[in-house]
View (tube, helix red, strand yellow):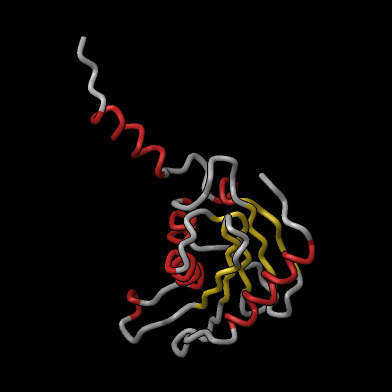
Amino acid sequence: MKKIDKALLTEMIDAAIKARGQSYSPYSGFAVGAALLSDDGCIHAGCNVENAAYPLGFCAEANAIGNMIISGGRSIRHVVVAGPNEDVCTPCGGCRQQLREFTRADDLPITVCDVDGNVLMETTLFTLLPNSFGPETVNSVREQIEKPDHD
Ligand SMILES: [Zn+2]
């Protein structure tokens, strides 16, 4: 697991806070911003987008993943989540699984900061989502199907 330097982390925190400022969260008032660093060194931000039909809302992390995908990124090196106050706001269960899809086997650092950008927690995806189900789980079965054993 490769650590990123402080200047890049600061840039990511700024991106997450800026994205948080664009949050559409009129129902909960719980504005969240996220920033992902993809393997090509680009930062992709996202904010939560709520909907009057509550279950249709999207989390900040999910929207940041969408922004990464449209830019061609397929692997995440680091995640920053900026919550709406001084409490620790880790990715929800659904977002942990969505982040897992684009996480390499050596884990994914996650930095959680407060509304002012102060770091509240440094953790990893595999700490938050142990024994997870990921692409290689599916691919191992797919390889068995594609290369059947002809004994
Ligand atoms: Zn979420």
